Image (tube, rainbow, N blue to C red):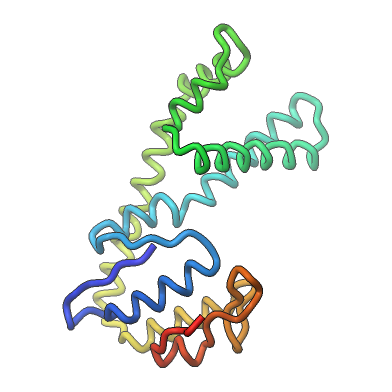
Length: 194
């Protein structure tokens, strides 16, 4: 996700947004959102992996409690979450419908969901997204008070990109294994011809 403002005083210009979109799409899902939604996106998808890891850790603990070896419990939990995510993305059905599809009347899954709902599972997730969003806004306010220069932000962003797997000084590997963007192009704002 990224945001581009049409204002000439913004930190990033439209060309920077196009370059960023090309870079981010090479390693995962990328979409453009309005600037006022960035904090909400951070609360959901930026912090989302931590929510998933915490849920997976708890699922594995449940498996261990019921006698599974830890390694197997983690693997089964991860496969369940991966399978559910793939099913949702490929079917484009509402998550509630997919949930209903796997709940047999009087079955084990609906009983387990009742326990989750009794414990406030949905409210906890909603509150977690909200807390992350609010903290993101607070951090942005603090950053605005320090007046960080656009050049410093760009350098910090490029440094973080270099820390990611598959990223080298010569470029970012795209889906076919070829280098799609050189860091020199990124720094100069020159779009890749790939």
